[in-house]
Every structure is written in structure tokens, then in C-alpha cells.
Length: 178
Image (cartoon, rainbow, N blue to C red; front, side, top):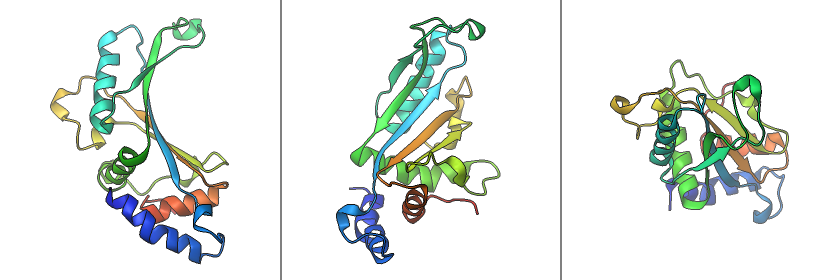
């Protein structure tokens, strides 16, 4: 198992139980899934979609699913059924391995990084942040990049409030700015 999962089981659960909010180990919030979404600006170019799929697969170790437009939007030159991006949903072992690499290797590589903005919570315990450049991940080879593609990283927890989710992510090692 991942070192992050071992730390969660042994240290984080114990610290959250000591806080007094929870009476049972089963009440302690946990990370349920991580969703990476990569939108594509130019839907007409097939190689951009293939590149986005390949890079998401390299980053996560899992092949992404192509997402399609639900309706036509003339101003964006998008027709219903056109590919507009790709996404990956990580659970279990791959999720904890990705979070460990994301917290310890990728986030510190962001230029002028002073911590993650804590305003990315949705009110129900999920946290979403945008990454402008895929080159922060050490798996990506800089020589092979043709297009600069950003992505959204959503961490879904079983916490009921933003405060519980923030405390959980902070104990797991997410560097929040103050």
C-alpha cells in the first residue's frame, strides 16, 4: 500500500478521533475519489485530444475517458457530440499514490508556489483546484510537449463540511496557504 494510505490509517484517523468530533473510527472522513479533468480548446484538432489522453494516462496510470459536448454552442463553434475533453477517476491504491505524488512532487514545482488556495471547497467536502500547466508532474517529458494543457483536480471526501475536509487534507499533507 501507499505511504499516504498507511499514514492515513495510523496517524490521521487517530488525530481526528482525538479532536473530539468523532466517537467512532467509521465516522472519520476519508478521501473517496480523485477526478482529473482536462478540457480541450480546439476540438477540431484530433492530435490535441490524443496528446491530452496520453498525458493524463502518463500522470495517473489509467487511461482517460473522452467527454463529449452535451449541446451545441455556436459562439464556441461546438456541436453536440464533439469531443471537448477527457477525464480520469481514481480510487483506491492509484488514488493514494497520485495524491502522494501530487502533494510532495507536483505542487512544489509550481512557479511562485505559496500554498493551495483554501477557497476551492464546494460546501459539501469536495475540493477542486486548477492546474495551469501539466509540466509540474515529474512523469511528463518536457521535450515531447506540443500544447500547454491545464487540468482540474477534484478531491472528493466523505466529510460533511468544508472545515472537516480541510482538516483531513491538511493532515494528509496538502499545503494550504494561510
